[in-house]
Length: 147
Image 1 (cartoon, rainbow, N blue to C red):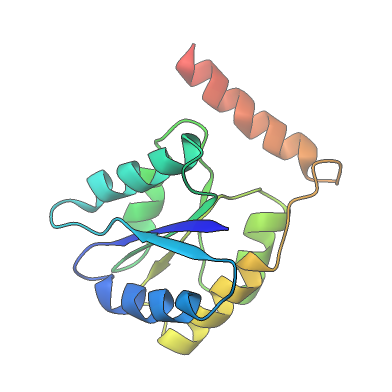
Image 2: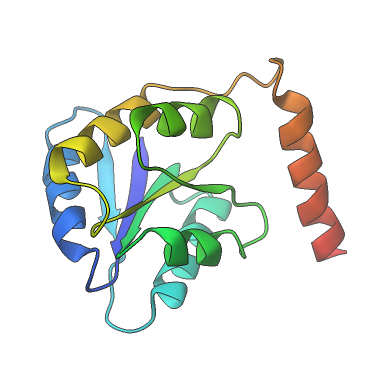
């Protein structure tokens, strides 16, 4: 699995923890798109790699996780979810088919962040499950925006 990660200055310390955590997992390749400047630009760049098929999933960080979540969700075809606990991470994947999760380095600690990532990576969306209709409706919003 190819995972794109990115952070602004506030999120960089937590990104470093998660990058090291992911490096120890077999079958995972990490692509760090952190850059100086605005988190919106970094989030857009990271999300665009997922839409283009260059990466499978993404994890973005800023101070609260809110800004990168809003920014990534501006990219058509992306579903980014702000996660603060393992349950929201699991549901981001299972109920919303979120390709990106976001976290706030000023909000959660390193051990919880690792658990959030593990929960999200262990969860899969069921395209025939009870949430499939909701995800299809979200996709229609993207289609309407593009058209």
